[in-house]
Length: 318
Image 1 (tube, rainbow, N blue to C red):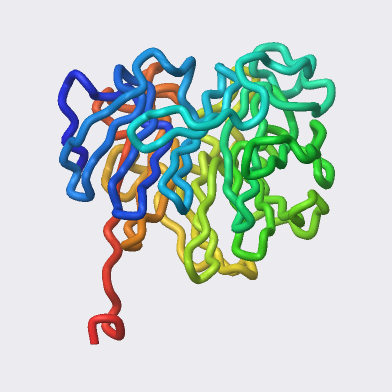
Image 2: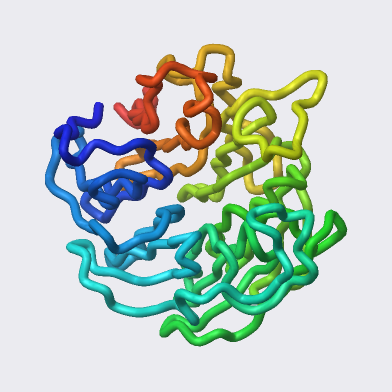
């Protein structure tokens, strides 16, 4: 689908988002960190050369601004669609001291202020900003719409309100904050000020989630085949990467993928990010290279970005 010239081609697409017109922005680890595509996959352009240590998370807000998370740069910034920096979200560029050894989340001593290898950001209906932080921390940070820190919560662990790699984050229309607590294989639900209200455990290493207009949760799951830390062993019955759709009450509505045929249309090797555009089309990006492609677990041509086109129901056609 993506018609990207060789000089802009990515090693892997780590994040994807679309603006209000459906134009697609791919945040990737490649020569042009932001690649811009039309809905039909045709190449528009790109930017970001030399601006990021390691791209990770991307969000487009209601005003068509980009928020980009540079995890190894310990940075979250707001940009215009053409790449003009608009705002730093919190302190940027210097890791906070959490005791972490590299990216080994087992060594984090305590959750603390921003940032240490942050992962993703979500924009609340109020305009407030929430950042999942991340690989080197175990915290969620709440900011004003203008980037001032309001509060933080979370510590390392698997208890209530604790995190082992808070990787993905979303905020629903009621202001509820939902965190993809990846290495605890769960979603944790919080009030806007960080009070735990619910936990779902029907996911396997969730990486990111989005919420559609009906309040359904679309969740990318890394699974337990690919993307394991060096200290991790796959379980006896590993679960492949997949995408799951839940109702607001937690009912499983749909699930596909599973990693049996990674690289085939509709299956996944290492689902990492996802986005629903204004037309209902779905984009899923995968960290194919870093999750095992560099070790030969999948062929070098395994795609890192897929598009799923929404099909109209009979009632809608009528």
